[in-house]
Image 1 (spheres, rainbow, N blue to C red):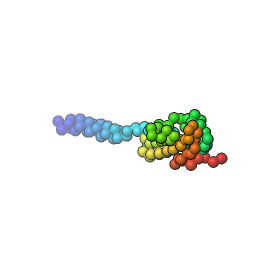
Image 2 (cartoon, rainbow, N blue to C red):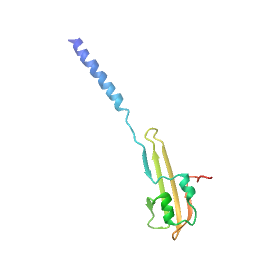
Image 3 (cartoon, rainbow, N blue to C red):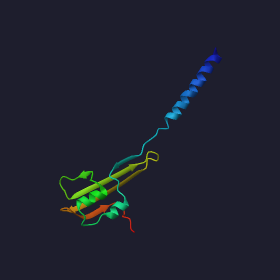
Image 4 (cartoon, rainbow, N blue to C red):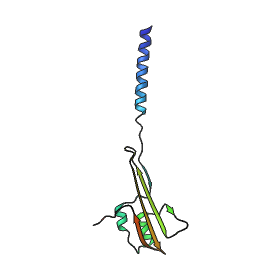
Length: 112
């Protein structure tokens, strides 16, 4: 009788241990939020551009300040599922009327 119990318990315990080990290997997706902002996009922005031209390059801003219609804020974050590393970027654009006057960004524009 004890041999029969051991023959049943050992494989069952092995299956449980392997199941626990496999469940620890959870797949995590990459999480991308906001408007993607690249150095190439920032380098294409020039003072004097219209809002429509800016939208063609960067898209519509996610955050629209109700108290200052002449400020557009762009935010982007990327979190790698594999390494859990976080990348954050932001850009602040100021307009006078319909024309771009300044660009502040934590991304250095590409130089040619």
